[in-house]
Length: 534
Image (cartoon, rainbow, N blue to C red):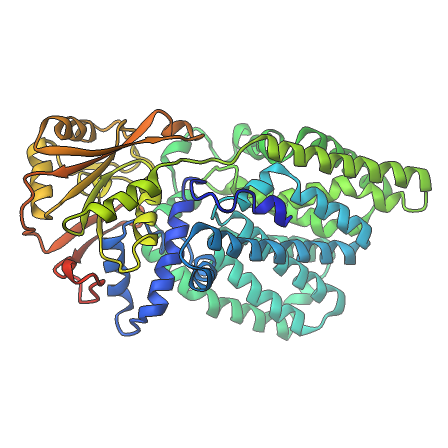
């Protein structure tokens, strides 16, 4: 598991959309812990975002970035230390899964189910990027193990532990709230739900969850405009998926077939599920409740991404491994089944290494060039891959000296994609020049091809070619990501640079439904201003 998860750990060009924001969240929390502005938490956060506009705090919960911050503090601000933080979650999750299946069946079945899980290509690849999928899956499996121990023993300590870890799972990613469905469905089919609701420890656990999650609920309601739209509201990309339409009801089964499982694993899991049905195996009810809960919740959820229902993949891996348990007294059948599982694990490992991770080179080089050549600490960027560029601007700058200004915050603004909740703030090159003058911009970094499709960003590139700018460096981008192929990073110096006259950066943040004004008076002090915002 560790070998597969840490593939190319020293390669800082690996990347995935959203992973850059989570990387930057970890750095922010580390800087916060070091500066510890306990009397100005909100102002510090706002001003930090004004300087490094690539955070997702508020949109995403901070528990995984907090663990990232600890690893960054020990090993330095770099991508590999953040991936070690992710691996820590993953180890906890696999141990929990192994222990859970060991209790339901036996350790041999648990080993096979875990082996198939860690070699499933869809699972393995999320160890390569700092995404929340493996952390939230791991926290969910951990809380699931603790709850199962409570159902076995009726000892309140197990339930209190499950309540705490469940809450931390939600602080890892809000979708973990669906785990309540898992526990509720299992309690219902076991006939224990009413009995549990009469127990004192259940209500104490509910109180623990309420206390621990109340701040997260408040933050999500306050800063969760996009989150709420993706969950219970209407998301612009999914009008055709009516909740009770056939397309919506079968969507995740198609995802299971196309993305989540390899074809041999899918066939073996179907065969194992049929085997369990003929065996009338009630032990399967707990993992089966996880599968049903995952399907119900993520089918209802408006947001449709193949990453979201990752929670049911372990169940299908168990289905594929479960014939081992039924054949344990049949030497030949058991041996053949063992060979099939080992062969499937080997095949899946081959599939993992056949497909290289996503990567994009050049952004770290561009950030280092800016830091080495800037005359004033203000850089303006217009890039689809702006998050990684911003991350490297901070990771390579121990003094935290540079303000990063983003074209897709000042020229335009949108949420998630350039077409979602789009607002255009500047319509001409005169407006672009005004922004560059207002903020005293020195260096400008742009991707040679505009990927937004918005006219002002295309005009901006023409202005850079024909206006008062000097091209200092051109960096070829090599990438496996289609959006970043055939790109160059162009670094210009603004020859008509003027002393900055604007004291605030006005940032529109449709993703959280806010507009903020960030003071930038003390840019030359190489420290983040923790003064009051307006």
